[in-house]
Each structure stands twice: as structure tokens, then as C-alpha cells.
Image (cartoon, rainbow, N blue to C red):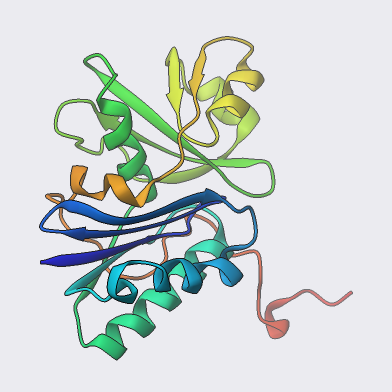
Length: 208
């Protein structure tokens, strides 16, 4: 079975086409805010235009805009191709990559958020069991809250800098690593924000 994996939850744009778990197409690049322009061309460049029997998409938490772009594209392709769609969490994918070189015990994944906050989640290194739900916390508060010596993810360096000690391993989610979490329970293809979205309807904004 072919699976198209779409990951736009961070500054990285990552697309992978997997055939029975084997990687047959891959794009991974740090594009910053360029997901909207680069995503569809990246998919079209996959073998057979990325056509797959199922689609998996990163639902966050992460960049609000990036998450929305990825989910919108995945929903449109799933509808057009008539294939199932499910989500997965950005922290789980990073944790799966981190486990390979991690010793026993807890590991903490951090992802750059907005407004001086980090998304973060704890996992067991054995079996990738989530030990907490994903959350968004100001960096200064999180630096006081977490005593772990090592952090993973796109927000790891910022957290270690705020603490003044510890080690950081910067990791971006990579769609090619999806087989590492393929056995985890799928998530609905809906965004995980962990805090209020940056953009609000006009009616909800305070008068100036």
C-alpha cells in the first residue's frame, strides 16, 4: 500500500511517498514561511504525482499556518483520490527519531511556538508512550519547570539557552520517518493548536 505523508508543522517542508514502508519519494527542506508555494510542487514531483492509497498529515502542534496548509492540502487530495486520511502528531515523529540515540527514561520534545512560547511533550523512550499531553508554555516558565538534561526538537536550543545549562539536539519532523510511528493510534485530521490561534475573526477582536 502506498502512503503519502505530508509534514508542514514546522519551518521544514517534508513530503514522503512510501510503498509498503519503503521510501520511493522524498522532499525535505527548511522553507520557513514558504509552505503554501512549495507544498503542491513537492507532491507533484513524487512518483506518479504522489498518488497514494492513503494520506497521513502532521496535525501539530507547531506553526498554525503551516499546520493548516498541510491539512488543507491533505484533505483536498484525499477527497480527489477517494482515499482515507489520518493525522499524526509532530512531537511523536520527533520523539521516534530521538529514541534511536536516547538512553532509557523520559525524553522531552520541544517545538518552536509563537509569542515566546514552546510546544512540548514528554515521552517514554520505551515504546514512545506519551507521558503528558502536548502543551504550550512560555520559554522562561518552561525553563524553570523542566529539569531534564537533554531536549530534542526545534525549540530545544531556545530552552537550553533560557536555562543556561543542558544539551539540545535540534530535530525537525521528517515525513520519511513516518514508518517509525505507523503503528501508533492515528489522530483525526484536525489541527492541534494547544493555545488560541493567532488569527481571530473580526467580531472576536477587542475594539481599538
